[in-house]
Image 1 (tube, rainbow over the protein chains, first blue to last red):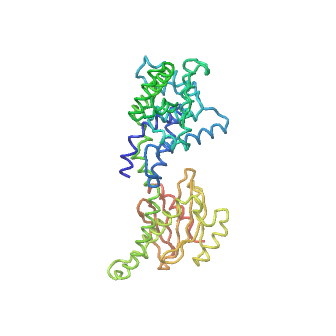
Image 2: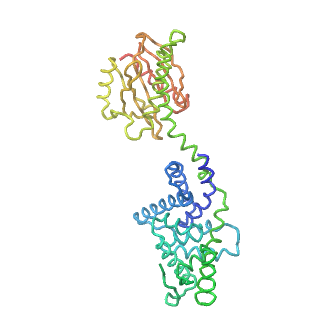
Image 3: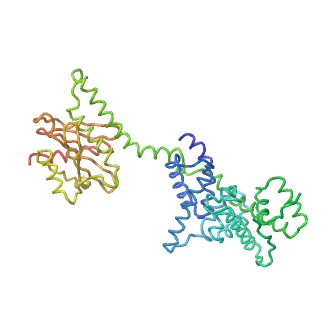
Length: 172
Length: 257
């Protein structure tokens, strides 16, 4: 349990960040992280070799997806545009607030699967292989979702029409 | 040396700084020649920075107490330990049985006393109270059958105490094995999920009657007493001053039939 504390504790802030960026509600996100940590504690000895970081993000992501499904099944919508803006950005960097809120609002408009890839790779610094493991998809799918997520977010931000985008061929 | 063509994946890996230095240099030189692609890559990079900046403050927030990992580990440890403590206690009981046989002339005979009864109740509590599936063998809905069964096995008329006045409902009961033969265990719960165990069996001395004495085994505590050769005990994980009036109620009800 000691090595668990040493390995897991430093990752909690990043888990909170990922959860909050996904669900955009501070207490709902922290509840997810708490569930994630409880599971991590009880399954610590079952984890396979490899990145503890990827393992924790996998648990957290699966919990978030389950919650999304339940929420959708109940016909309720996650608060996206109106909620959590105060919470997402703290008092720091007031002059950047508007830009921050703008990018986060636009991020929230992405399909959940694209948002997850973009957050894991661009914010949480997971390798493409680790992101693929977390999402349980092939690396090629990570790349195509990442590309679509970035493209779409760019369009949202610039109001650029898709046909004006110069894209390179995807090469295997 | 043939250069691999630059693909979409390379551009993203360039933005995410995931390329080997050699490949990175190749992409950089490609971008130098393709201004339109370079603009797009620069936009991706800017977007990446904006996202990171927008979310950065979350990691600086103090952690809420609910996410304190040491605390989560502690509360996790406490849960299964009750069962393990009970198992360990049962093992020790086995060892103690062996040791006790050789020591019995040297030590006061604890095993026939109230403390033995209270220990049996505590072990039963440790094993059955955390059980969410089948804490009791016969449910309260069949309490007549339960009463009949345990009375037959104990060869004594047994009354199942009614603890409604104390806010506890009968969940049901079962027989448990003790070194003194079968004992009847009854389990109760309240609206908060607190569970109590009442254990009764004949004492080795058929006339034994004792005052009510506080007992504790690990984190399970309660009271035990004997009346007309029958031993009774009430145990739970509640403070003594909460359990005492309930024990008094049981003693009152267990009076002569």
